[in-house]
Image (cartoon, rainbow, N blue to C red; front, side, top):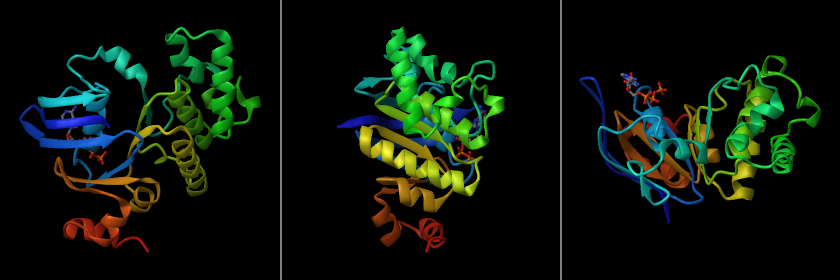
Length: 241
Ligand SMILES: Nc1ncnc2c1ncn2[C@@H]1O[C@H](COP(=O)(O)OP(=O)(O)OP(=O)(O)O)[C@@H](O)[C@H]1O
């Protein structure tokens, strides 16, 4: 069953058409890695899923309902969202950051404590860090808190925009393994933007290659590797071993 469907979506900024006509579906439980040239419309596509950007034409169906019919605030809270760099609330400690959406959803104190402990463990954050503020954490720890916060309300769908772009290679690999494990265990659907073809082929159950607001190829990592749709995709995968 599709959790996201783009139906002839168009996006225009001023006079510039950045997405002329985009149609695709994401099945429940997929881990879709989006990769493509800079400015090809990946972030715009992602932000149209949780209503941060509205399409200029066409329709987007999320969880069976057009975004035109969704309550956009409720939609945003129901979808996990992780972006590059620290986007934690600087005046809230780790515990408060992770609990943020749960509080908005009026969860009980016990439920919140349980969820905070659970997601800190899953993201490999020591529980002794609960009272620390973001400025007192390493980049990798901040990114882990960002992931724990996005997952704490156990969304069906998580959008990730280059979530590991700002961390060192070792932390990046650890976070990749963690998100892969979480995906396998929890069965959530993930849409994840990366500039790293190795990351795309390793993490994705599907890889979506974009160029100039269009999908060039959308298939399993295996097919992308063995049957690149054109020279652009071939060149992209040629950078891997
Ligand atoms: N708010 C905006 N106003 C005008 N143009 C915009 C706006 N946001 C994005 N664009 C333009 O739309 C195009 C697509 O941008 P988008 O951020 O979606 O690309 P991207 O594929 O995510 O790029 P990158 O890989 O560099 O992050 C770019 O040409 C960008 O300059």
